[in-house]
Length: 128
Image 1 (cartoon, rainbow, N blue to C red):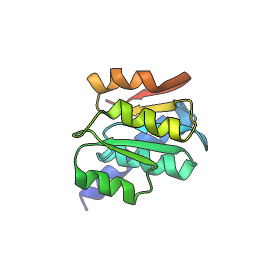
Image 2: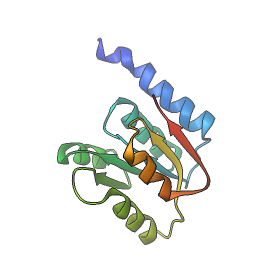
Image 3: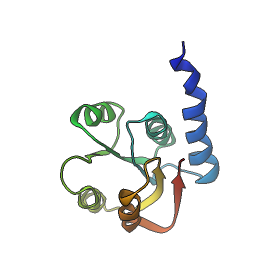
Image 4: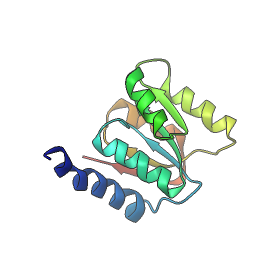
């Protein structure tokens, strides 16, 4: 029962951020950093429901498998390889120009690197 108490916080936060602030629409590209955490998973699920192309970054094989089971379009394991190159390759293969919405509950170096993937007028949602 205690775990259910966090549901409105995680999903409420992501709902307001993605739909009201960023105005996420079908066909847009959503990049979720820390995608296997509470607000990350909620962002992934809301993004998929909206019809967005969802790219998720998480650490570890188990988390990657979980995110794939949610229907994420491209999952990157941050513990292996170059995250930015992997995402650029996915975007190029799909003939996409870049990321429309960056959802970031992590911060740090990856945030700075992710800026290279953004389209003009992209929305950046820093979750604290």
